[in-house]
Image (tube, rainbow, N blue to C red; front, top):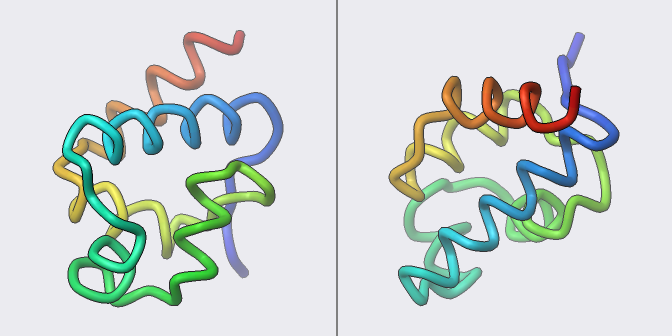
Length: 81
């Protein structure tokens, strides 16, 4: 099955992803189509924190956005516990 991050952790991760996107001034199209090759709607949901972020989306998304997925998840867990 799919493993996903939910709740406050999802919100934390979404905020960090949005901040990274903003820092680099990347467009949603550039991230979704050019770098991650994940459906734009999935990337948009991850950035908005509207739904659980699947591992299948988070890992390539972090790689494309020059972020360490493991460190991001650890920081999210620490910040929300």
